[in-house]
Image (cartoon, rainbow, N blue to C red):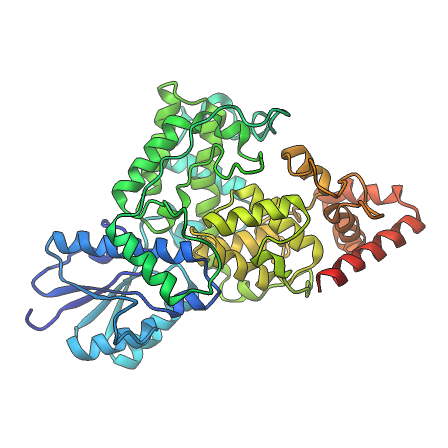
Length: 512
């Protein structure tokens, strides 16, 4: 190669062949740059399966680019000269190859974006930072939506996105006459458990992925999680097969049972597509189109299709918009002044609370839990306990294979922990153990009784629920959506309140 024109930076969550970074790429004078670095696995104590998913995805993507004839500068994690840091590796490459310009699609993490910007200044090389068109709403789109609004609510943004993109629309109105079908969705299972359903398609590791697994086990032996059952899709072709499998076998029941939980049933009717979408191996437009087609061809009912599309076109786009609008201060918010440490059992699953034991055990085994296990089991407990939201955020970022900061931080700090004071969600998502009992079989056989708030059999969720209401009563009383729950405090006598406070403090002391 003669004098290099562009060094095109592709990060581990930007594995998109149609990326704006590759627009105008000339194999004769441009080069792709990719690097596996240890720091990305040690900023938080990352699950082994998450590390493998990213690195295996990167290696497969790099090989595909090479087959197309694109020059690729690739630094492997196990290269002897690897310095373990993106910026150090980039600076060394720039000094060696002397490109005229760096090209980068906006990263999925604010600090990473800042690091690259500062590096370009130090190196005195132009940085062409391009918009990530993987997403269906640009920053400008969301600013236009937000202008003049007192509050930012996903529902109104979602309706606007449906209308703009013509998704599940008919004559300017939503298909079926309703924007959502929550009343028909979110059911629990009968006592017999989930209906018969097909397990998700698996993707046994090929030679490239097996090599990555070996390196990860050797490099990060003390990191949490297991690779024994690793079978995540790590290429665009596998992502497409995973999508087809979900549409064919689980979408139809997704709506009804999207919030239901059952012991030793990690997948149920969920898609397992968030990881490949967040690595950009699968375009959300393709996913939405496949789901919409399933409705129009009679393969899935409208409530299921609408509920699934809302997660992608609504929540996924909305949380990204919130992230970039409020960073970097968003990451330090702690509206409820929660200061408790994260319980150690979040890293082991060793707890006598069945729901947490199952959800965390599943997380450590697969690097996966579905949204209600995250929001209303692991997230709910840390919220009620009063854990510092930054510690909760770091845990979620570490343990789930689909975790990228733009999506994980608002969902955790905002939606789950209400640390942003209501930017993401208009109320704290709190419930007693009775909610978990209603939506799962976790309480069956558990030593705790979700109906009791005090005494030796009291469910910690129920105790902490009532204590949370009392501790934040003044704040919650002002929230219209919390008024019914706050009014229920009037049912408690002063003696009962004192007993709940004492039991809650005993729970915290026991965990400390």
